[in-house]
Length: 296
Ligand SMILES: NC(=O)c1ccc[n+]([C@@H]2O[C@H](COP(=O)([O-])OP(=O)(O)OC[C@H]3O[C@@H](n4cnc5c(N)ncnc54)[C@H](OP(=O)(O)O)[C@@H]3O)[C@@H](O)[C@H]2O)c1
Image 1 (cartoon, protein in one colour):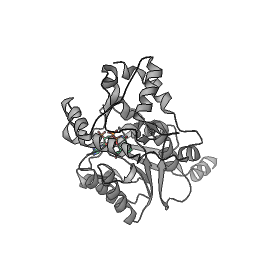
Image 2 (cartoon, rainbow, N blue to C red; image 1 turned 90 degrees about the vertical axis):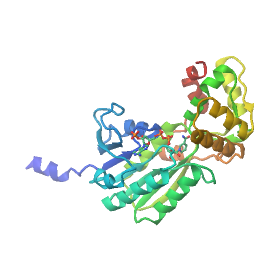
Image 3 (tube, rainbow, N blue to C red; image 1 turned 180 degrees about the vertical axis):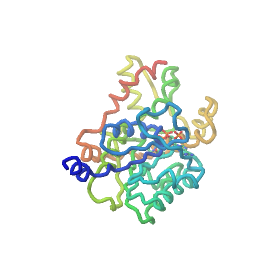
Image 4 (cartoon, rainbow, N blue to C red; image 1 turned 120 degrees about the horizontal axis):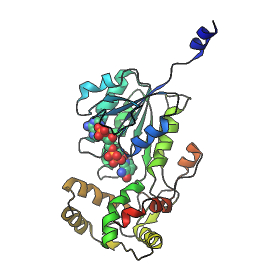
């Protein structure tokens, strides 16, 4: 009798699916949700490729194949939606949103970007995806984080070799640690309150920096002079392509520099503190943790 009561009293665990589970935010989110009493499903194009913890259930999903998406979302209550930057991002994310609505998902947490509605990729893509989501009969939370601190890893080799630079000028950007983005996503996905609200959250680190200020901070941490060389957008594009970057990625990187130059991502918010209860992680700490990247 007592066993039966226990079964009746135990709620069915909420099912949460993570699209982009192997990505920068997705991987941190999977780690953060692993110990929670939820049914967790990681969505990836390559299940069992060893990119995810073995204990986490995985389902194969390819946003390019819309017919496969609804089955992958069967029984899912809440969905975290992220895809890496891609020219197919709008079509792909809209296909997944439509599949989620059809599968009865009640709430989507969509990873967007601070800077929407700037008319540059990938911001304009997120604008279009957000507009589609707003028309759907589903609860959602759009997360608009500032640029991730981890993009600075791309500066590792140029810093080590003494030719770091770009087209960001003295513009300011409030970079965020992906672990803070994942912490917020985790809290939102686990919320027990209404799932029907539709809201947008801006997420930032604790303060804005210019690239020359980051160079000064790297100089302090490395114990040698680091400078940021100012280039025009065209010169930066040529530099990136000459260093092996594809046209597409170089275009996105230069677009990001232009957003930095105009201080479009310099906003200060208290969202991370309010939702997670901890202060957003500091850029100096991220640089210290990754100092080897700038010595290689
Ligand atoms: N980077 C930044 O500074 C920054 C800042 C703010 C917002 N954002 C936004 O955050 C999002 C994620 O960007 P990111 O660069 O951090 O991503 P990322 O780490 O490169 O992750 C890409 C993820 O997308 C999944 N994916 C890609 N194509 C897929 C497909 N066809 N079907 C299924 N899954 C697919 C990959 O899964 P599998 O390979 O396992 O299939 C992978 O988990 C982007 O929308 C970006 O605009 C980025």
